[in-house]
Length: 288
Image 1 (spheres, one colour):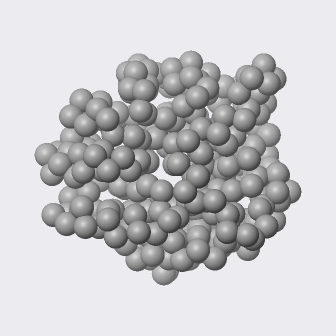
Image 2 (cartoon, helix red, strand yellow):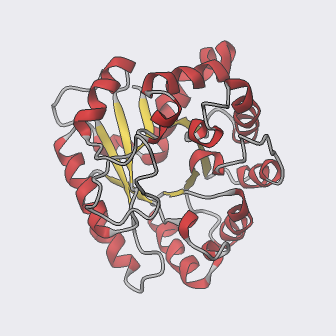
Image 3 (tube, one colour):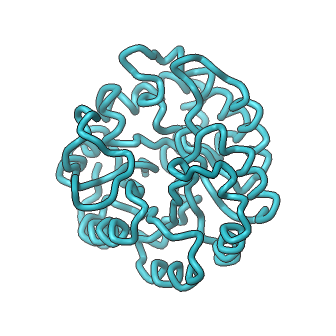
């Protein structure tokens, strides 16, 4: 089964999207399941992981409702308030929905680069750790030292680094990203998404050759059993289209890696990480 581990839906004006503005040409409009489903079929993708784009409970309600109506959405990574006193109750409520598979705090928009290591956040992450609920990390390289602090306090928490932690691909800058990612990868419960790269590289200027050293480094550090394909649709359309995003990653990985690990990278790892056996389709047709 082919799984896209990272995609979004949104409705302009319906929720608080701190990153959204009319200057984002091509993205400042609604994107809904009817826009994505034909692209999945054309590319042979069976199911997806729908990820929050607004740090609000209301948007998570909206995403879970979409998941209930579309079997190609295998799971929702929603938003939870990691600073809240009632975090445990929030988590319990969300887990009652079978398509809720994890959460994502909006780290990239928080001014404190060490926010993940703050005591209140650590306390609530320990609750997620005990419940064995995974979460996504949307970070820049400057946040990775705090990620390492977080992992020292909650070493058993399961998490996945989105978009390779957004290295400076366009300028070809590897450090300190390279060293920090290698340290994070030493924690076997941490995965990494091969996603969001084309937007970072400004695909009008960047090429597969620009992306390759970053993908190769992540693959070497995490290994083929802890990385997963994610389109980051619709953000990826800024660098081309859905099908081209998939083909670009395949070209970067190369035939040898694909021959040995395609099933893991393009589905199996996401299935294991998000434990999608709990969210099997209920009878509607798959996307393929």
